[in-house]
Amino acid sequence: MRMDVSRIYNSAIGYDTVLSMLDGLGNPGQSIAYPPYDIARTDDNSYRITIAVAGFEASELDIEVDSGMLMVRGGKKSEEKSDDECQYLYRGIARRSFERRFQLADFVEITSASLENGLLHIELFRNIPEKMKPRRIKISQSSKNETKMIESNKSAVAA
Image (cartoon, rainbow, N blue to C red; front, side, top):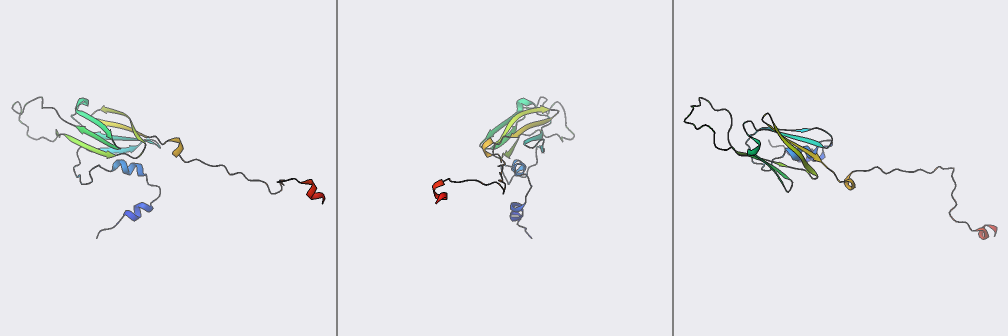
């Protein structure tokens, strides 16, 4: 049985749409889970994408943003040791190229990227323009006892 959750999702209040847009991959049919990644909210408008890129150097990684799509690519250079020098009994460390895509929400900008201990950290900030931010309008209330004169015409009062 297939359940249509679009109506439930559209009526849900309080879920962060920016986070769900970040988590959506550019290719919905993509099922490859390499390399693994995390998306974390670090503040109200700040996010961090952490991608596990063990074995990659900074020069082998590329980060690009185009039309709201964040693309992270990694390409391994040729192996330093040829396969003739050693015989692997088991190869569990992935050494393949990759490309990860993330759809960015409107007004999300990359502030920095760093590579530390095999983890690529990409810092993002949602910078909403001032004119698009919600603002409160103060409601003034006049007292009931206060009488306001709208127009004064003494000749009409005397007659």
